[in-house]
Image (tube, rainbow, N blue to C red; front, side):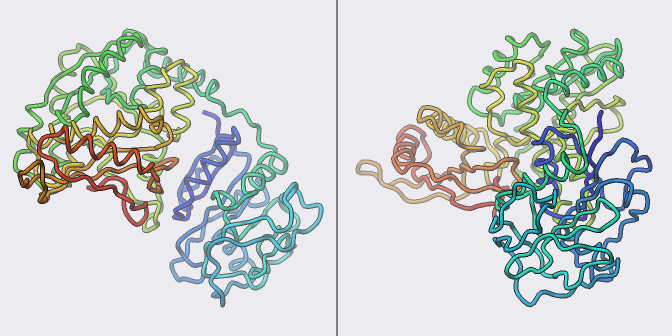
Length: 510
């Protein structure tokens, strides 16, 4: 796989956004912790230093060894990176007297500087730091300022090292993508060759070489990641790919049958396994969210292992792991980017399965997975499916799990999702679902009082789930959906809509 750009992670919550913006320029990049720089950097053409929750003035401030990079490769130091070069190389960094967080505007840009080509004065940028650079490091030239930040950008003479105190990767920096493009394309001369077609060609060739004539088993979920992984593997090894789709009894209404029908048209070798009762038995009486996940993960592994043993001579297990999962498993300890979302996955591979792992999507972000799927001709309907958690409806039923609760939530969820599609709202939402609350409320139906369940509807817009805003769905849609749910789903007499953003709330409730 081509390398091109190395991103050193200092624990910033925005590090993945830097990588996403670089990939949007059709340039391949990789993220590594600041203290795990590869021994061989010959394949890289540029380096970006991320921000950080640390202060350079702290005793435990990250101090990377850049001796084999500085002066040899172009460097763009963002926020903490800019302060690092100043503080440890002859400049001065002090606590800021004004809170340098949020929107700002460039009040000064030095003429004829390639980093700011095409960027006009007054361009909006996003600041996020409590320290500020009071004096530049040795041999530096100031490139830009804001009304509150004198040294918003600078470069070091005699080397292609650039530093900026703002975040070009966030949406609020209006010319941020231009700054990144200027650095990577015009200054570092990185080729823009990272395309879905190139990825497919390289990955299929790599899979053929790695797997040969051996057999691979893959657990399908019906989602985007596992489906794209399956088609890539199918292109590489054909009939030697064996797919297993397990119904854990916690899928959406009729999803088991509809997904199997969808896979028939894709030429994949898929076996459907209905293990609903086995999962529901394992979950009986369990209310703790983490315990639910563990039970579901362990049961899935048992079911999957039973089915895998029915296939002779399997040596590889394929997984739909994507790049955010990889990044989160190696992120800088203590930083915001180190959070691992255990509820999104079914658990690790136990030693007794003794299979080698193949992960064809492990270097892709979610939007890249979709573009690769489109390149291979996968149906738009499948690629546009909302993310769905590995434990399924179990973490959308707060409290213990019963077959009746699953039935109620499946019906509610079906009305909500189908309504979004009917009103042409589905593709405007990143993820949507319903949550069954562990409370009942008083209601009136006809002349009778009821005491039945409350459900919450949730719809968010996002790009990758790291942050999310609730969607302002039309009142008319919510009114009709609520009315339909209460009239058609026995056991529900109240519907509420979740208007919490992430952060501070999460997308899922458990």
